[in-house]
Length: 127
Image 1: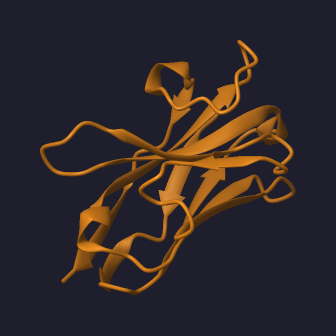
Image 2: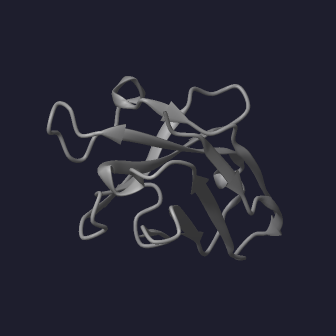
């Protein structure tokens, strides 16, 4: 069992930056691929990006590529989402998610492939 807790959301102006954190419980954090998803008001939840268990591989949605960076610190059981050049369309609740790589697919962009989810953190980008 893994519990995930996001933090770092807030209100930021267009062009600004935020760094989200997702702290995981348990001793097997390094066994999980970790991802970020987001859900804007009135829209379905969408994939943002993912990082492999070791942190050596990442993959991003086209809409955030170059602007967002995912990293992880397995010693701290934490994954991060650095968001730069934020736009109003980035406004959403951001969720982190964890999955054991079964089946061995990377990147996994579909929600159903994820075993554990955080409660989400709100990011609002003002224009």
